[in-house]
Image: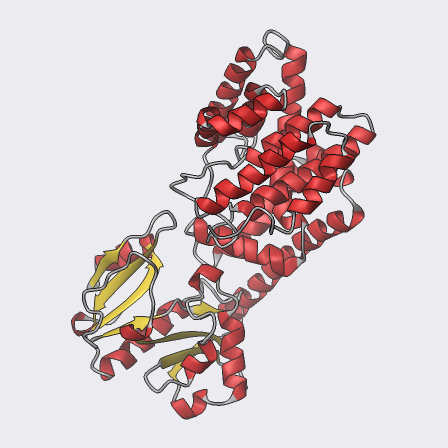
Length: 446
């Protein structure tokens, strides 16, 4: 178990909100809260889980939903029953402990909820209708268009027909559809409204890794996400934002603006390469060149921009730069300072502890070099720098007489290389499609 039900930073805040919201069966709702945290932690989707949809997200959405819902109750837009349904649906909206991919599947969530005896017991104890809870969760399907809307909407109608509260009652059904929309918007705002921009960026990186997106997609996908939310669902966005405290509203909007500024910077950088003759330079750095504090600090700051699941040396990164067996190639701008904007780094396979479940037949034979995940500053992905770094690194490894190179890459990228290069899968890692592959350096350069 990765943590206890008593150590999550949002737990006490949620409990305080439960009390202030006027919920009577506090003991029952506290049991729900503890049970959810325990299940997420014991199933390996606690705070250390690689993806976006972990226990942090579940509780952030619960907190934001309860916070906004409580204010709407004070304005008499929602009643006590609505608060209880919103809290429960938010708490369980991604309740998919046996997930095969990071993105929760709403149908899997409601199936798990309907079959979990302990959870059903708690819902009954709270006096809630499980059909309405499942309908609210189904409404969190995103985007609410096309195939992502069609099946969940049909299932929602089935839930309404099974519920004694909503059966043959269009007014009630419409009310809970709107409540589900409220939850859906709070779901997408939750993770980006708590904490500063560095917290939001880490979440965006986790989301990108979980969806197997190239690094170049992180900022542009984030901007598209926020623009779609604010423009296409402006009515509900305004409603949820107005129900949140000023500090949280400001956090969210500052995050949106920060992503948009980053996207502007990406476009500016791309323009310099396209129209101002900016170019990349690559080199293999000597041990003497790598020993300066400036060099180490520069590479460390770029390393820290990687999504955490790709930071394979959490404690010894600077030390590894000075290891004579380490190969470091840097990506630089053709400016007066030869500014470093990226690097490729690696060493003997035996120096690394790879992910659990990976077994390399060459481990111990001293014939394989491991290339760590390539790192670049935001804004420089997608301009060809990664390919240049891999080639220079492979040439350096070849001169040191390594027979094989192994590394991680997105599955699509590996499959593309397999047609023209001596590349093979060693271990295919699900759900994130970030796979371990091998290259025969005697057969060609990556």
